[in-house]
Image (cartoon, each protein chain N blue to C red):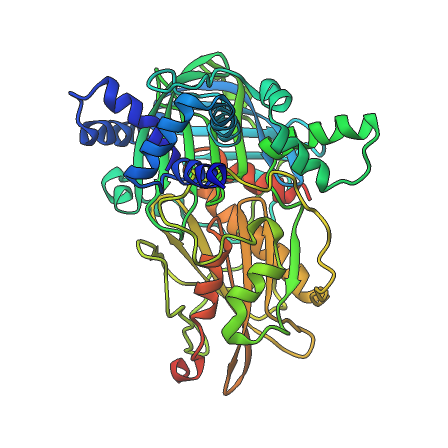
Length: 317
Length: 211
């Protein structure tokens, strides 16, 4: 492991500091990172890059009276805009999802839990966006997740740069601030522009009507699922059931929906930067279903999850 | 022969898979063999450029790791040759472009856009292994057998990006293709609600919306 190896020299340089202390240190940096967003106000610009896509964005982040309001504006191409207040999307210029997800159920980043599945290492310090940054490596202990390099503002803990790296050490994704200034943000800066449309609650979550529950038979260790959600993407469609799984760092969503004459599908894999989608056709007594695993996990892991739906008939009522 | 064994040991060392004997052998040989020392240096540099970004260790190493991407491109013949072997035309301009391509492979992810492949023809039992060789070349060698512990390590032997479409692939149905796009957005936008780690999920979602 490269980080371990390079860290090795630090160990030698500071043998008196136990590796455990270093790891804890990395953990406390992650803790700081997860708290930073609700402690500071800033204005900045960042870039996002993955295969086939490079985009630039501006952000205004206001923390006032314990309420975080954030306005994001894509600076190139279509002026996509998002305003998020207290964890909820207020408006978006393009937002496919009618469903409003409840962000309050977001689990806090727990370094101790994370350390079961990743080794956390402090790599050193550098500069990002003109700020002193501390580099934390999050290295998976198995092949079911990616590695991350997080560059945190040494003063505030804010995430300045993030890299996602696969098992072959290929960079899959880069997020990086290019400019950042901490200052009070006036309300006018986080007010939605005219192109930012109110997000309507369209389709409510439904009861699982047919009583079926498709569950993957296998999950990568450490991933736990949230609530199952069943809802249609649009009014005239069959409901889709979805469930989000996370190990505290990586996330994937499992979608299951019925197939039909005009809804043909077959086994398939798609890849978009760090995000993989793997579809498997499931056959049950009352027709065919499509299960799709979508998330920032290695394709082999997604394949294995998708393949674990193997004996669906038994789970059918 | 001897140098091949040394190269193997060196690779193993880079992958953190070398045993004590190999480590000693490499250390001893590099002390005497400047070419091997150079190779080690290039491996280190390529690795640091590929995976370590600009943060590099400053102590405890006998090789100079201070050079950045420009130096790596100038001094890394293996890297460059591999990139060129993927592109047979070699005019002066093209050579420059392949250099850019190498740089791009440092910073860009591997697959271009969404790549979809039907796997209907693949027998169920062999799905994992078979798709590994057919579907996404960049992930071809990963598979379920990826070495745990080798993550972040292992100098990639294929820095050049093969973006050829997969000829054997069937096009997915229009409905399925639309659905995959929808799933990707749903997943991304859902994740974006959970601002963790901070703005990254938002940026992912935005990049999908921009398509």
